[in-house]
Amino acid sequence: MTTDQAVGRRDTLTGAAHIPVVIIGAGPVGVTTALLLARRGVRTVVLERHRDVYPLPRAVAMDDEVRRIFQAAGIDGEFSAVARPAGGLRLLDARHRVMAEFRRSPHGHHGFPQTSMFDQPQLERLLRDTLARRPECELRGGVEVTAVDQDGDGPVRVTVRGDGGETHLWADAVLGCDGAGSLTRDAIGAGWEDLCFEEHWTVIDVRTRAHVRCWEGVDQVCDPARPATFMRIGEDRYRWEFRLRDGESLDGTHGRERLRELVAPWVSLSGADDFEVIRQARYTFRARVADQWRRGRVFLLGDAAHLTPPFIGQGLCSGIRDAHNLTWKLTRVLQQGADERLLDTYESERKPHARHVIRLAVATGWAMTGGQDRAAAIRRTLLGAACRIPGVTGLAGRGISPTLTSGPLIRRGRLSGTCCPQPWVIADGRRTRLDDVLGDSFAVLTAEPLTPSTRAVAEGLGARIVPVDEAGDDGTLAAWLHDGRAAAVLVRPDRIVLDTVPTGRGGFTDVATWAPLLCTATPPSSRLRSSRGTPIPAPPPC
Image 1 (cartoon, rainbow, N blue to C red):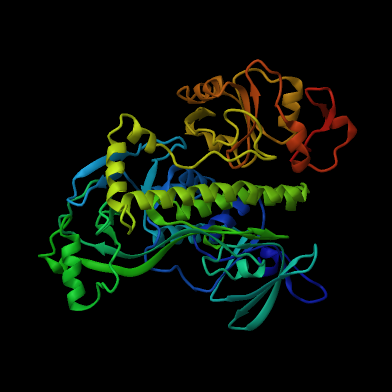
Image 2 (cartoon, helix red, strand yellow):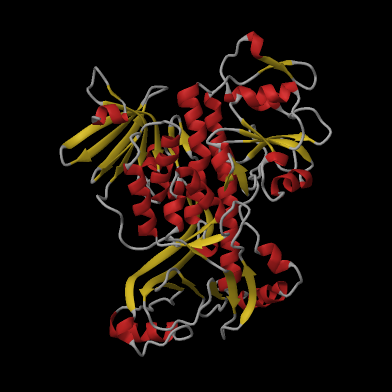
């Protein structure tokens, strides 16, 4: 297969390649985006200035929702072999006494451990290897994107500089997954909304076979004078993060002695030969959100759209959620002629969610580290007292991803805007995860027989209908519907509940609101009727 066949066609006037989607940046967010689009048959070119995976570790933790997204991208089997479930979080005082412990379950709502530790270079290699097996994708490394231009409603022009000089690509959509220094963000005229957090930390990644005093989770030292974070990443891999004082350094001979003192609560460096510092880097942790995430057919994802302090391990997770939210909507517009307004829901849904997570990370950071002001000791005392209240640690140990706020694709109902659970089910006589049964499109989970109009909506969307009493699970789905007072739910391709059939009611509550975004013109014979008897268009078959 030639490159032109793999990625699109060639413009007959300019000779430039025309590609459905160009993705700028081949980090985890960019490659996951390409894989999710490939699963839906959308061809992409991924442009990356580095020729190979960046070899040093960065992100080290993810939650069960992101593991579920990797399942959708087709890499979870390989990823499970290199991921390490984490036991949770411990808050330690200045003397390293446990103030509170927040346990994380090995079996979360999404069917995976609530927290998993990993090595980012390993993850990126798995993602790229999977990408290489997808004929819909092409990765071009060692190239630099120098401009992204769009004129009106036409295709977007991407200017690329490589060994062969400067070339142009024309795309129906461009996705900027190009990090905090995003050129794409500049191209759409976006700026930063500063959420008022900035601290300088030093991150140290270590490989050692020495005895390290740890548990299978994360330690957070809540000491205003010397806040620190420690975690075990792999069999012989560990990470420490310290907020150093102004002028303090871990470089040189003196720095080595200082490092010995800092890690002494966890490991003795008497056997210094068995303590390899893989990476030592100084970072500025910031909290920011881009003031706009889209202009026309150019979008921002990941660090190009938001920067999250690392205290709750959600920086990478937020970017992967961006990809999951956008890809199914973009596919529906590009391949099925859905209303362009469907793409507006990407920013309106993801931006408030990302801002909430960032603020939670900031609040957690200030509470854990105490900040650097005179009220630090008071905050630490209050934190310790709060952790002794019965039930608080249990609540804090639940998933931290908030419900999506109300919008055109998030309708009324207790379950709307939440992710449906993913238990193991029985399909064709074998045990499998729910999402492997539902596929990549819409789904209806129902505890009652569907009315003709509700069934017509499901069939119009190409939704898989799953009676929960026939799912062969452990009762999770039926209990979830019962607790949510729903007879049935319509689940989006990203597993978010769009609409519900309340118990005792016949059909979905707001079809007239969301159906126009998901469909194009529909023959008169395909019309449904709302609860008031008003004709509304049913989405066409996918």
